[in-house]
Image 1: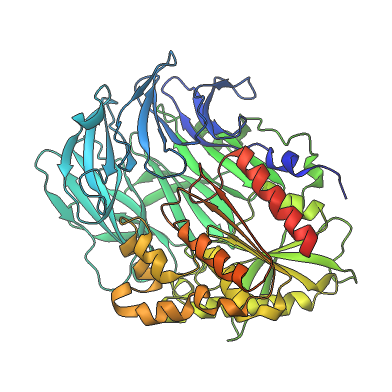
Image 2: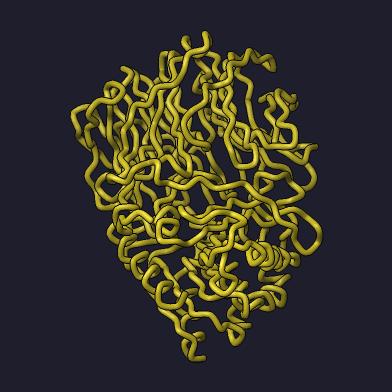
Length: 604
């Protein structure tokens, strides 16, 4: 085993969130200081310049298409009430919104760079309206161009800057697309449909058409063109058994990049686009296994994106478009470091499948520590790490904590149980409402598979997860108490009733679509809530939360800890006053996961 302490693994850096300026400057986010801040680079491999210096992490950065300035977003203490700021070439920062009680969701620059659009719940906390604002305007100077009645997102400006494309989410698997005439305020509905249909990554094309990924009439997502006048939908590229899960378009230069999610691994394709005709150029193989966040240069001559792998920390690459058409490759611009840990010591996962209770095959990533051979007798403990969502997917990107567990001799198993995205529409709905506990049965089946592996110790299996994954940990400990040596619940749901009552009002309708409604499904929600079966918990439990969490309020942590403690089961609670839905700041991560590791060392 290699002897590097936890803090070293947690200080492996990430460079991500790239955006290209009009003069070719690359801006990106990097967490060198312990939180993601804005940095810029003039050339590949150069010395980056730090441009923001906050204790809070910056959420995104977006360069103006015409000026050497960018807009970035930031909340306070993880409360997700993001505010917008403008950073100019000289380093001056101007606050654009200044309404800290409201959320602001970026909608992009106009092509002229004089205005930008965003969605905000400043009028009514439970719904999002659409605003446009001049680049030099402040606070409530923004123009309210549409009053919404749900979860609205701005997809971007039409080529003539006279219209915006909007997406309204009814659930994670059901959206509608609209075009908003900015001058008249008239909104045109393009996607009336029955049942659940996804429309994602909606982007304007060079001919004024819209490109989107959708599963209209299909089990998997495909690339399609949507007519902004008639709503006619034309397939452009099918993903086959896998999702085409994202698209980015440069409408000024007729460029399009789409991503295909193949069992969690990314395939990217660049295309010259004209209507539904694509001339394709597969992107060169990038280091790592997961890539995205495409940003086009304003001249149409390059694109930037981030790439990561389980054994490769995240960095930004720039691809020259003319060279790509001729078979050229990508060039790494950023050099986010590995804290002195040799890259060759990082462990790659194996992609495996295991059979669950109803005969389905559940995909998972399985990693074993150095010195442990699969199929050979050993007694390694194993962490079953369950993703949140549930509308998400565990993919092979870099995680310092995972590599630390592996360096300490723990195997790591990451299942994509039913309800996960990436495997088709039908799979995502297998855990809806009354089928919720079937996903927990998938975790039980995972343990069946793990205890059959001779390299693992069947008596040292740990359940770990965050958010919905935290619920899964608590549910696994209550439903199958004799299977677990310990549990780690981060920002998890203990009681679906109190969670839905107290989550941010802008989220409640979306969450009820997944979990069930308080009005119609309260009895079911109470039945499946781990808090109501807490007497079954036998394994020691560590609970981690942020006091400002607007998604899963901290009361979820407080009630499960109180109930477990009353029953004499070892339990620890750690709440950070300056964090929200997750632990974002390095100093807090070090404290949190040092405590978690010590807890597991004691009990496992």
